[in-house]
Length: 66
Image 1 (cartoon, rainbow, N blue to C red):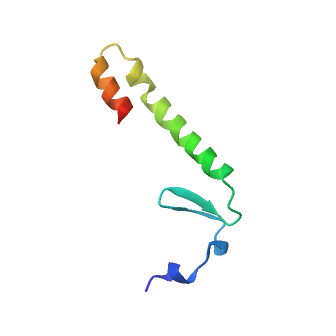
Image 2 (cartoon, rainbow, N blue to C red):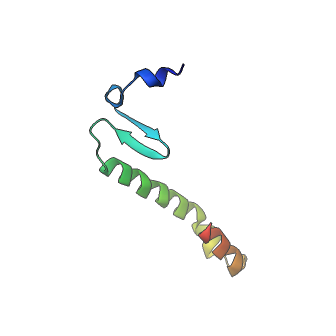
């Protein structure tokens, strides 16, 4: 039997469940900040690739849409 079945949300300050950050006070701001930070990381990681003139446009579009 899983030990997590005996614990409630109040036992944790915050945790990720199915990709969503949950916390005991149910604040959504923490989740939004996390998503914005993740999007910024991905954007700046791909910035050099998307600005490159060597890589064809169709490849950049496939990367962007994925």
